[in-house]
Image (tube, rainbow, N blue to C red; front, side):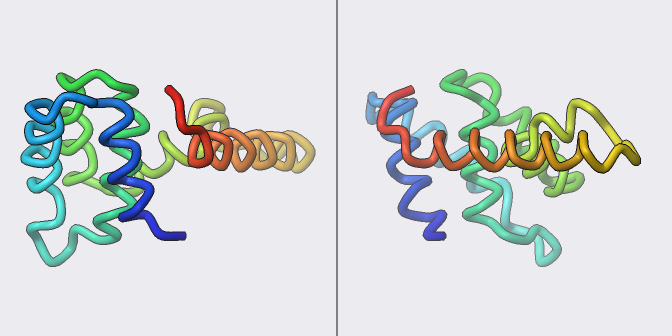
Length: 113
């Protein structure tokens, strides 16, 4: 998956004004500086998804990612599993995984908010 291309599209979709795009890009630059800050484009995309168009949330989600990037990826790509926490119920796990996969790919493909 080309996270960079999708990221650029989603930034323009959620933040159509150039001024806002620049603010978002400047905030995103704060993640990926350190050697241990991994999967930069994927994390940036996750931040955009979690912020859901709220420019004021970008910095908050960047900080979450800087502490542990897996938290922001979980919120973005696995929201149902993230909200339900750990469970041993294999049937529930399969249901949640399927819902998460579907919602994430629908969000990726969607050209509107």
